[in-house]
Amino acid sequence: MKSPKNKEYYLTLSIETSCDETSAAVLKNGREVLSNIVSTQIDIHKKFGGVVPEVASRKHVENIDIVIEEALSGAKINLKEIDHIGVTYGPGLVGALLVGISSAKAMAYALDIPLVGVNHIEGHICANYIEDKNLKPPFLCLVVSGGHTHLVHVKDYGIYDILGQTRDDAVGEAFDKVARALGLSYPGGPVIDMLSKKGNKAAIHFPRIYLDEGSLDFSFSGLKSSVLNYLNSQRQKELPIKVEDVAASFQEAVIKVLVDKTIKAAKQTKVDTIVLAGGVAANSGLREALLQETKKEKFHFKYPSLKLCTDNAAMIGCAAFYNYQQGKISDLYLNAVPNLKLGK
Image (cartoon, rainbow, N blue to C red; front, side, top):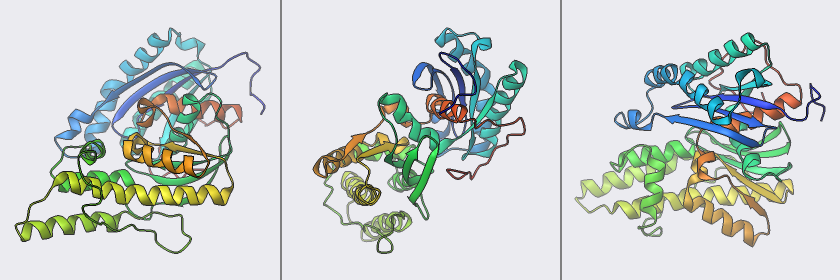
């Protein structure tokens, strides 16, 4: 791998504003995090039951300069020491993305240093490089978040083969919708995970959606509808609803399909390592199920710490570093691509 420069080490300033976290980080050689500042908007959007794009964009505008300053200060780095700037340009909310992109372009232009656009999904995958300094491709990655569900064969740094993805709702989206139907707070994933520990996962049999024979794609819309139908039926019959059992049974149906398809994909690609990434990677039930199944099937299993599961700029900085090393540099016409696909 050739580097555009001949330096002992490289400093990356990275920015992430794809949804409702304003984040900036400074990394050394892509894997050593010198600072990682995250300003979350969860409390703001909680009263709406989900992220309001216009509100998110305004809060990014208010927070972006402060967060960048904190990242530089925390890393004890002067802005002029930065070698390149990485920024998420998709997928995500277009208004939110534009805030980060505008800041990154302005600094890259003023400092006359390279600008590196990063795919948000790639960032989630790269969080594992930060967590495990010895992790190298190839491996299989299950990316699960509020907006994405992907099975990715990571063949090399920056080289991805999408083996499967959701055909409708992302897994995190399904968690949030079921949580809302149960009258639980936003974000729904952590609440359902917590309640599942108190419930009986075999109490209600919700469908496991496997789609066509041999398919590695996912579908959670039908499962979500099944939960809603169950709740409506119980209410119409004036029968009790044990929220913990519904949460546990729903989560079990999700996990079963995710784990089965992940193991199947790993066997097909003949990798020896399975990696987990994305916000839903924080789900304790999913982690434990994959841990048990990978041990049984003799795969190595890697996953990021909780702070690297949710959106953060450190993972974007890691991806930016490897893109930079490969000469993948953006120009100042870089724009937001809300439906950006991995590998495009």
